[in-house]
Image (cartoon, rainbow, N blue to C red; front, side):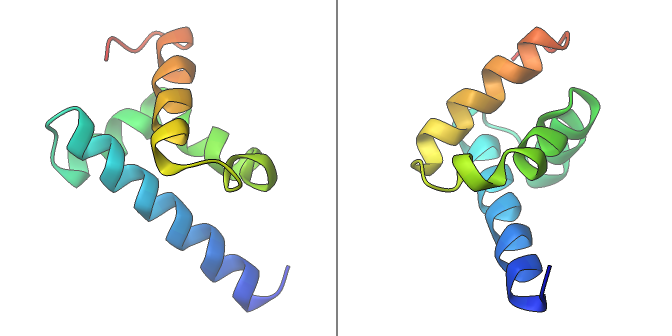
Length: 74
């Protein structure tokens, strides 16, 4: 993976964490901690190739579903 690809993935994860925080009235640190705890961050990184082709809103919905499946309550 080259530097541009790494940058793109990081930028995407940051955007998704921010959108998740906004949708659920969390600050970015809270959203990141929640997504980390309930495998949302891992999901974004593992499924980047498919997820980044969707809208950020769709990605946030997917994150909510993944985290609920892993025991989250948001």
